[in-house]
Image 1 (tube, rainbow, N blue to C red):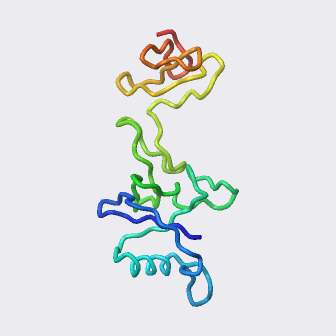
Image 2 (cartoon, rainbow, N blue to C red; image 1 turned 45 degrees about the horizontal axis):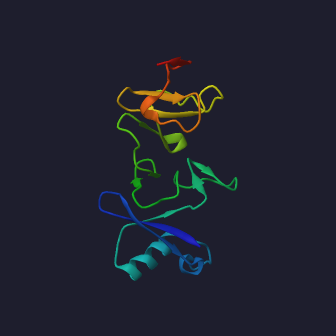
Image 3 (cartoon, rainbow, N blue to C red; image 1 turned 180 degrees about the vertical axis):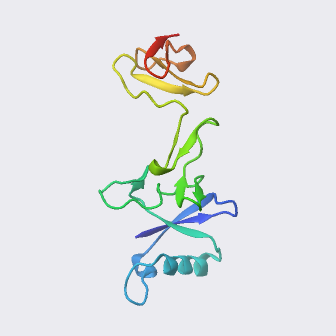
Length: 154
């Protein structure tokens, strides 16, 4: 099965459709995106489609193959024509595109999981990572913050 994203005028993914491999084969019997797009245009009367790969996330292929267009498209994602990447919604205003990894990143690198602070999240208001020393606490009362090199008491 081939998968295609239906794009709105603004590049937003408004639907994702699977198409039989047989409906994407060119005259030489090779899967061809253009043939799949033509099939979908004829079926739906909609002109804007891009093929996507179910096996691609953060510019990595799940099966070790070649990643395709950064991420598998989903409704709400945006097609970036310049970089040929499907982007998930931007999680925070301060985050920027990491084109090589096809993902959004915080202005301060994610400190990752540590035993000392097993739960963390980005605090957009304070523009920093905040966390807890115990699992399942709420982030309204975070006890630690990441200063860029170490966890500090809040």
